[in-house]
Length: 134
Length: 134
DNA sequence: CATGCTATGTGCATCCTGTCAATAGAAAAA
DNA sequence: TTTTTCTATTGACAGGATGCACATAGCATG
Image 1: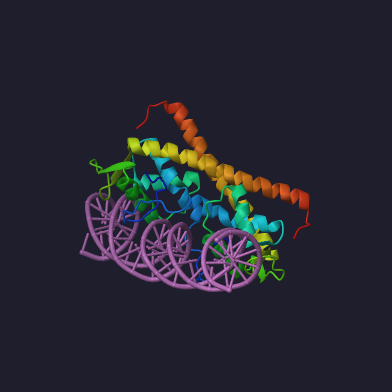
Image 2: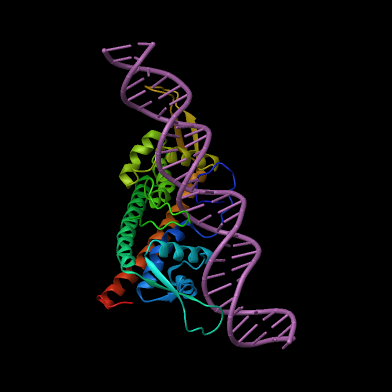
């Protein structure tokens, strides 16, 4: 059963990829990781695991990084020192990206409060109702 | 400045409508509201305000309700007793919808934990760094 | 009957996401 | 040496999700 509840009339209820929730958290998490210092895309993808975002497709991550670069949140350059494999791109947080990260943390706090409100209301309602509803 | 960080190459960074986050919380909130008892769409839209979802487009709400009906989470009938205005549809939670609500609460708890993890990491990093980063 | 209010629904353009496949360099295996 | 494998990054495309503008429709009021 697909619980994600998107809209769309097309009756294709297969769940694709990871939770939509995860994607919402991708951008702030990437900014946070980059706040620790410059990093390669692949490194970032590895580190996403620590935030429960390990099921995000690599294409999605690279796209997010390029989008953030277009917006000026991060800058990138090709890594000079090639250790092994193809050239790697190094991403770095910009001053703007730093501001955006602050904005994102405020946004995440708001989101958490909204979720808390929903969960609290649900818990309270469950206590009151005790199986009596509708 | 648009901070929402969507993907898309089309360089149209104007934000339309409400926060995407809000839409993401729409389905569980609707189910929660319906858990209190049957209600009309319009009533639900009014009540969304209490959950910070007042800026969600009405089309989106009605569409969400119909989608949930297609999925069997809610059932609906036309209201017999017409007070004023056009016929209104009354939505009611189904047994399946009740299960789905439980699923959603678990999902929201997970999401909250992920957000907490991000925020905690950020706060800790900010404390350590104190202006020294990159 | 023209206007306005309440309530719901539709069409369409646009935006957002995931999948799949392609490219590409270096190292290990054959 | 040729093939395979691993590391990294990117592009194309289909299809899902959203918002806006607008349509419908019943009742009320003037």
